[in-house]
Length: 287
Image 1 (cartoon, rainbow, N blue to C red):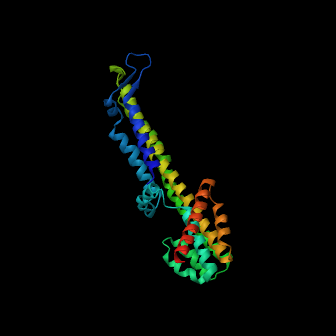
Image 2 (cartoon, one colour):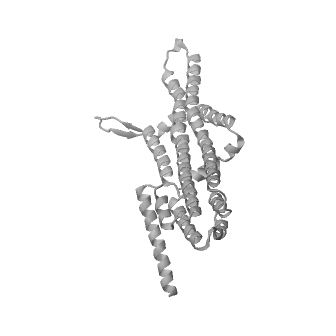
Image 3 (cartoon, helix red, strand yellow):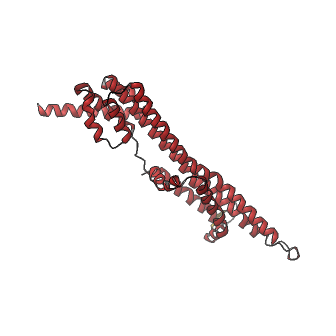
């Protein structure tokens, strides 16, 4: 579970609500006052209809239905914080390298069928089928590029919503101002201008909240997940290429760890030491 996203979103909403109901007057006898009735000042059905409704329909008009149907999947992706772990892929590739050195590349076919990741399975089967290295790399890198392009299209959908929400907030403000000016009666004075202006500005508030608290973070998280998946797939590509070339498994681990940050490398090295320790323990038991 991606707790950062949940905590950040809830925290932003809570802080915003506190700011709406709290009044701070420095130097007064009671400097901080809370009035929950102020929340009613920020509720306006017409503003909600213009800002949220128009934003949704513009997004619907801008993107194909297959992308819109994938929105629930997008939320599942951003909430899942453990989808792509480079260390696990490195451990599996090192294990495959050890098997290939002992029994040959054909022995990897059984391991390929055990893979739940279609890309990983495809990469293993390509070297099992003894394709040319340049052709294998071309196929796998093209797969990564096309996948990343699809992910960018998904993030662009939320970028679109993030850009149009403030625009429709301004449109709602203009609509409110026009209605206010049309309804002004100079003979009775201008006592209602303040409240009418406040209502007109609420749509701008809604637009900014949608853009920066809802759609913006989703687009950023989708791009972050894309970067994580691309990294893991690049590791797979380099790993299977090295396995096909017959590289030493220990050297392979060190090479693949260079794709990761220093802290992640330390975890990867610890994982490799633990796996070697387990194998020695099993060997000792057999003896």
